[in-house]
Image (cartoon, rainbow, N blue to C red; front, side, top):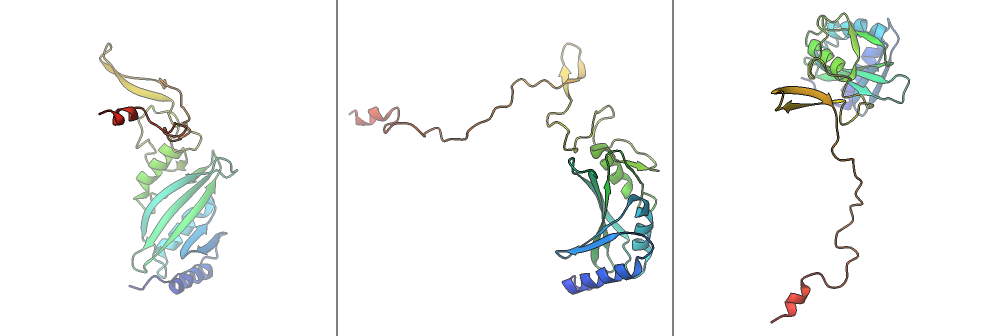
Length: 205
């Protein structure tokens, strides 16, 4: 297996640029990592190319994740982390999406993407078109909202508790018993005099 050094990564970078000429994309080499930016329309073609080309052989999808940038027009960044075991290198395929955009599922290309896409839908609300079973996977079925969006409140919208009178679990709006408080984090000993309470006992015989 080749050693993953800077020269080898640059060779892969030049190889992808020379072979991948059937769609628009941007590729960057930064700190020894390859990142390929493309549109959602070209995602399937690019992943098939990376997987099936014998010079690249990106046969392993490590995971799929997303990042939320709520102040940007293209709010979400979906990241596909690919690994070539035989060639010993990694590449990240990245797609920027608006809030209501949909993206094609890749579960037919990489079956392991099935649960990853369900997790992204559950936590970010990004919908994958053509997914065989796009349901929530980490939160409850009647959960409201998507908890990894930056505009989701830290306390959530609802809370679950056991009601002893009804003898069942109830779901109700969040009620904070105490408002959030800001502390100045100053030492409790600052501002005190020369003598502390109890010092007078030290002089007693």
